[in-house]
Image (cartoon, rainbow, N blue to C red; front, side, top):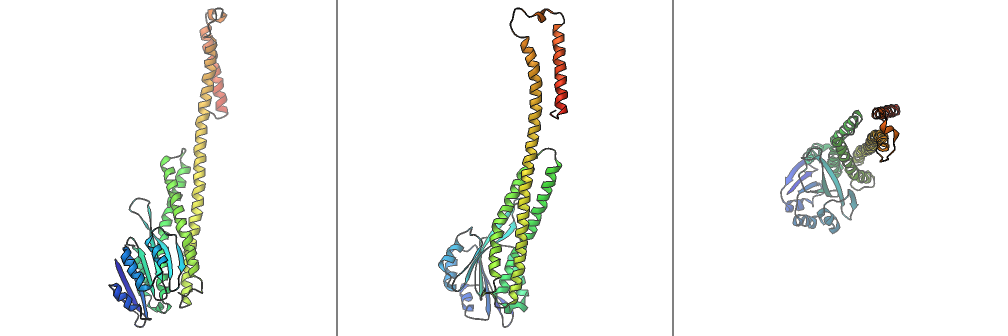
Length: 326
């Protein structure tokens, strides 16, 4: 599905376009800024648009292939950019990343993605409200787009941070490791790793956009806005790194606690084995088949041996309790 919106900078008005031919006609007007959004397009639609906008085949090929790394590439007449939006999935605690491929120059921004993205409505509202900044060109649309996408990461990361701290508290409050908490801890660490894999290269993309030599900046005031987004994503990256390291530490601590619990069980089992081994040794001695064993004919021998075994057992129990093995 193709959705196109253009801005007439002379009249500061916004209008929708409903066909590729209408979009192509507006390309000739230097006072027009275009935003073309393609949701789940087929290969034919993308190639038709590529012909109209003279997009490089390599950039088009990247747009047709999913799971691209966040990046920005400069071509002769445009930039190709890959960025990821994030949303909560339908499953509990699931994070869904939406790949967004972009073609942009000083007059247009083309966005390509598979599924509808809720943040795009806010992008449109922000762009149409910022009429005072239309002289900044397509840069202000790109700013509205990237700022909205980056800000959408904060509530999700805040939720993950709260959950990480809650799991950490629960692990240390329990005397024994909990399997459910351990599994969720592993899942949470994986989610932070996925976020880091996306956010870190996106920070590099924004660092490139803050370069003042970037031709997308028709107005110097746009630099301030891109630096603001860069500060936001830097804060995101730092938060992700901090809690990723913290989760690694919690995981190591949890494994240490589990190991200590296992050692306690092994000490108890060892103590019990030693006690039984001593009693078995005594019983084994008197179970030998010799003809002459004087103690066997003693009237109270049975009770003496049982008493001796009981005394040894009591002594061993006292020793093991003293060294905290029981």
